[in-house]
Length: 513
Image 1 (tube, rainbow, N blue to C red):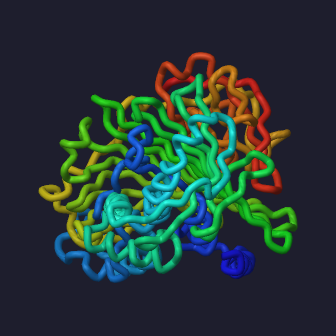
Image 2 (image 1 turned 135 degrees about the vertical axis):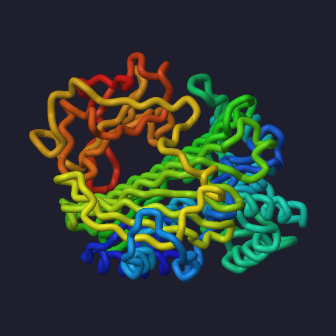
């Protein structure tokens, strides 16, 4: 595997010199997903004390769109009277599509789910031993698991939660078995090196930390530094689950570090919700670091999953890429189910600082676009410079997906005040972050970002540095509710060359808008 990583990383270092659109299939993102494929964990119903799922299901309509998607856009009336259809085709095929923007989020979550059943099948076999000896590492290979057909069926169930049909899930199982990611029928697989710990604070009651070897058939020793690749935390009721990984690779002076977490809640009477966060830092060893921060929020449309038979979800996605003075951001929101959906995006690239791009589309159950619209917006005058359109927006089909403002259950909007500085001036570098934490929690001691409640970046949507003394016009990420604002602290996050952050407490107040 390391030879493959070395090859991909060498390609990455060459391609990083080229400025390009934020693309979920870039070499950098492919490498990040490769690390996640070999590092992330999930959940299974094997042991009743462990979570059954770690995320809401992905609708079938969010599977990878057809490569000929724009060719399938229906012809007909254009509601806005826009006639530049050729431009719309060019933009759509070049990746200015909300579905393509969502591929990165969907595939990251997919990499987690495709291994989730495998991981906790193995964890379950040594769970009782680890729980009986809290705080003690149980070495990998404490026992072995003989893979049965029912276990493989469990893995197929997990793959179906990616939006795959039963036949597609079985085909994907075979593919992952051939890659050595998932085990074969009858294979003897060692349990991971793992440690159980009871928790007395926060939303979770139990924690399992564990590591697996890169080769699924090789036992993994207990880590000498006490740091495991994977962690899962959950409460006794299994209504709150946090999974996370931290993985890094260094090759010939260059490095890539990936930190990812998935927070899943399925409390009775509330909508099931998944929050996925990932930070990826790529350093070329010459002081140049490319930092990518991604957040995906997915919420089921019904308060009881049993009633959500269409697989309907509302979602928001934000991806930010910083490299030196360059900044690229993509924000997506919309609603989809197994029959189709509506998504809209705002894309900004500071190499084209005069324009922000807005595009929206509707699509059917197979991901084929029925309607597509794109506009250039001059950020200096807030006017539309140009626009293009294909197809017809049919409200009788897609009206159920559309909202002028998408809101999530319990969501509030906040702003940051009384900081008295600006990103990019004085001690605040443009690549810094201001993060929000509860009183008494130091983010330097929270590598899993379990207690992180939100953040604001150093760049606005037009690429300018954000004035922290007046952030009313800037969107601030916030994951908590109104009760979490009491005593909330603001910390400055400084990016280091190894891709990690150092946090310093600063003045500032987070208030509800």
